[in-house]
Length: 126
Image (cartoon, rainbow, N blue to C red):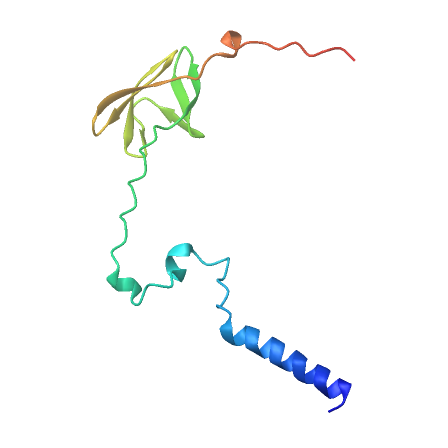
């Protein structure tokens, strides 16, 4: 047997043996739950119930009180007293916030901290 045949035979034996004994690689883009090796039937395994999403109060962005009208902007929507918004009713508009009627009762949605109360950081001169 010549050297090139021997080298080719060695290469074939080395590469074929590693593919037979190697474990298949896990697809890194698949979720871990679907790639568990011990599962035989995914539908038979009970799954955890996802938690209910937290109920977030809307954000009051602006209060406008004039001599003839009172309006607020909540989550980008202009509203007046008596208007409904996402299951909430605007009951009263105050300078410091708005009173909303929810299914659970009255809620005060405060206006964000006025800019006059925020700390001011001086900008260094160039």
